[in-house]
Length: 245
Image 1 (cartoon, rainbow, N blue to C red):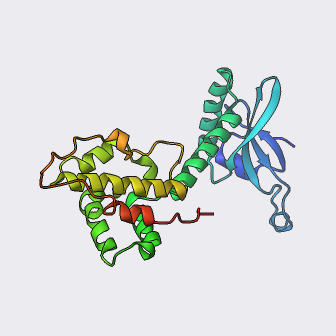
Image 2: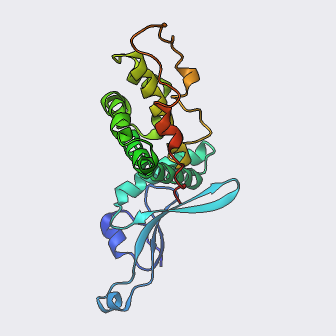
């Protein structure tokens, strides 16, 4: 037996079967078989849910719109009206909804896996410090990153850092040597994040030297560039950590 559903009360009383909804073309209330307990209470139907039926590419399709009474009859009508517009304009509403859900799920997974620059820097130091030469290596390596890097990029996800962020971090530092060291250390950390799959290795490192060329200190200047055995010691001696599984 089929019933035309006009109200919440009609939806609650409808027996087992598929029932059209008044004023909403393609919208149906689907009522399953009653359980034994439901039969004992005199009910003629079981689980209830809304479905929208339509045609797309010459084929009949059906998509669920949620359970009743969690989704009210008014809400179901509104969704059916929106989906009808999509079908009229040549779209498949179910395919569109599935696509949006997949995109949202992918974005959610990406957000869950994001690692901030500060977290990456701490992991980089923790992984490499035992192999660095010199008992003061860690104490000397961290301050420029902590004092000048973290305020600009510390809370950014590794894959969100751009060249402009790096420029801002090194722009107004007290000396050229600190600028050089800071850029090199940001570059090293971002290289490490690529190895850990926290950022796309196929994307150019925004802290790479070719993007931040600056005039070298003049001969005799107080601040000289770091020596081959100085600042590079920490980054070059740092072994690559195994990729995260």
